[in-house]
Image (cartoon, rainbow, N blue to C red; front, side):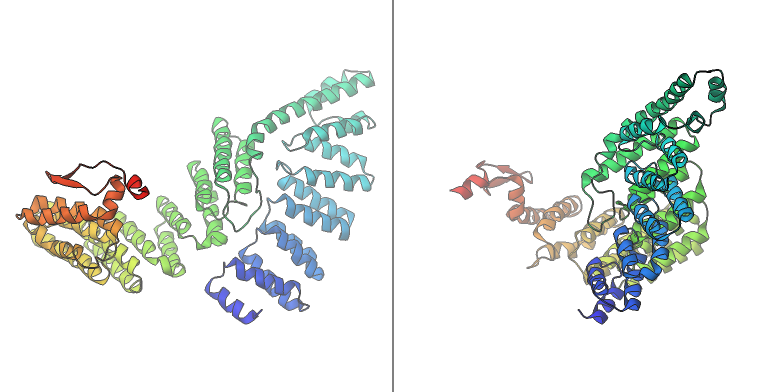
Length: 542
């Protein structure tokens, strides 16, 4: 493959996964360690959630394997698999004390994950190999508090292990229970009492486990992939989050908050490309007055692989506006305008709406808003769709200002604003008359501001409809003609114009396909009356 061409292509689209896989393949078969490091480091900076590639990178670069595994669990801290890879490496390459610390950190971070049983098993097996039964007891007691898969298996293993361990080692760190236990003199009865205590812990944990099993069983892809997630899984994650948040609302304690956070963090591994989950996570903190945590979620989102989704930047700006941090709002808008050049018009429109909310009656603010629109028009001049959207939005703003001028009886300013809005729409239409939204906007604008000149002002739309070919698609014609008919019925003095539009509508093939009947009809009070009710499908079959 041509590495230079691939790298050039990535500069144009850094999130093109297809090109990245080609580069990664080139790295795998290469002996150039600098090339391997360069490709993998760059790739994982964009796609850190691909935990399997961290393991591949570590194997290809053994001299830096330890640092790579450390970075992997920082990048994907809620991935059980990433922690297992790291622990496996430490078991093989690191000393006992360090390996134990990594296992402890791993179980603390993801030990309550429903699928963490493999990690706990490895931890137990490793401590067994080190002949540390006391540590094994501690691990079992931790496991009994985790609503994880194979909990019953761990309980059975624990009972076997406990039968050969001293009572002191098995006794829980519970002062009331210790006092009660001290009153028992028989060792067997003490053992039974201790095991009964642990079994009661198990019962409570199993209850929690049974609550989450319906959601956990519907998670088929707990890992990240570039491909879209199945709709059923997206729905399941939403329902899981509903359940977690409901528990928190019932009792806003630290444990329930940690549970909500845990589910969100796990959700954001397979659902990282879905902005709504990021927004929902931030809203959870914001709604509970944890503003810094909400801001942290938005910051993470804008720095993650989702950075090519403008909606998350917009949500971030709206969040900062709610906090009255207007300087931050402007910085977010400015940054996103440069970042999303193909969708800059959306950002510009939202920026103007933000400015409108600040000082509605300030004339300088009005000038500022118009300058934003003009700058947007200039920067998006090569994109017809952008110009169309911006023109409609700007005309709506001018219409809004004209309405205020009318209320203030400043009729001269009102007329200037109305004409300016009309000229903007007409200019956009002349450049690209193919957009139905633009036709609709012009008609509605004239109905609102045209007064006695409404029909004359829309005359060019009427003429365009009869052009051959018409700028609109046949389907869009079908929705625009009734608006023109209504316009002409109310504002034209010539009924022939109305009839001409009606005949054009009734000759429209899609009109009859939509009705589902043959074309035989007659006009009655401007509406078609069906005579031949034989379905088109049957006629086609003949």
